[in-house]
Image 1 (cartoon, rainbow, N blue to C red):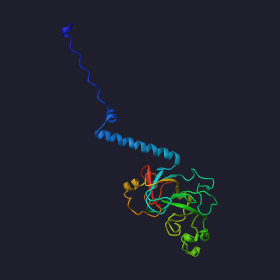
Image 2 (image 1 turned 90 degrees about the vertical axis):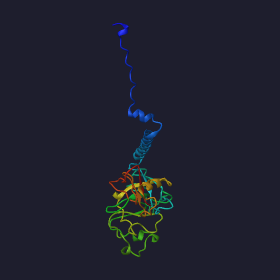
Image 3 (image 1 turned 180 degrees about the horizontal axis):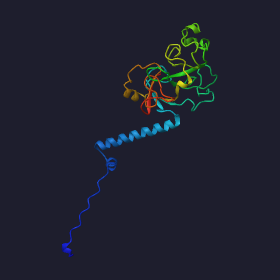
Image 4 (image 1 turned 60 degrees about the vertical axis):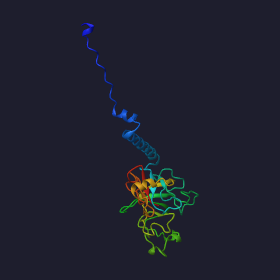
Length: 256
């Protein structure tokens, strides 16, 4: 075939960019927004997984929605919690908790003696409660004589709610509340299996965003409650689900 009869070579078409390549190279428009959103969610998820590995609960952070733990834990604080047995001090009991009123130790948590716990109990309507453990009681115990006179309004066990103790467990109280939870009807004696987490440290005001998303940022909240994310403490001060705080994300919420 002569040179004059040859057909010109067809020009090769440039390879079309894949969706991922367009997403990665976007510098404006919807793809840029989507890329930044996915990046942000990935960072949050990574932080959550690291905290889960360290704390043993999911989600590992809760937002406080009430003032019952003032001034040591405040409304809108973001609190990191762990399963009870982790990071337990030497003064702790078998569950990893330190009693605020009966343990002869210098151990303090959030500026006062005693562990701050997040707990829930069957039949409660609302979120988990975040309060301080005061002392431990046995099944059937008359704990009136062990109670601080400032934290009860009763002259005898017969006049005191949850006395004698209906079962073994913990007596709890919000730092900003006058009476024990068990004396004012907030909660029954807290069984050990109802304790879902122990508060470790707080980040002031960072929980406000979580509460705003839940629509509870301007509500009074239930005294001593927390609101959850997925597997975390949830708005109102309760935690649910076999040893795990319940909710819907990396950050849950609680009320103090």
